[in-house]
Image (cartoon, rainbow, N blue to C red; front, top):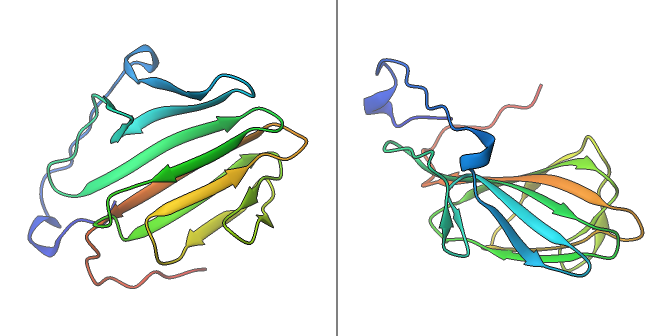
Length: 139
């Protein structure tokens, strides 16, 4: 997590939450689509893990074969990523295929649409903000 300049040298902080304390939100029963809320909130269910320095959302979405997901977030969360760890879901209005191991940097907007296709799909959605002005470096 990138902290604001005023907090760069704050002492490290850590929060531990048991897996059973993290909300698992069922978004669709058939085909099954779920979101495990690691940080943030989803459909009124909030994680016990909180950040008082930077706002962010971290959700583990799992879609059964044929499942579809529509997710919207607060526009203040301006940096967004989607890491695909299972399957080959189709992402966005263009339905571009992503594959396991890909990290997608999502563009402007505050909504995401994904469909799993013929196989189950799993992905981590990570969003934070406001933008701190730091450059993203890819190596």
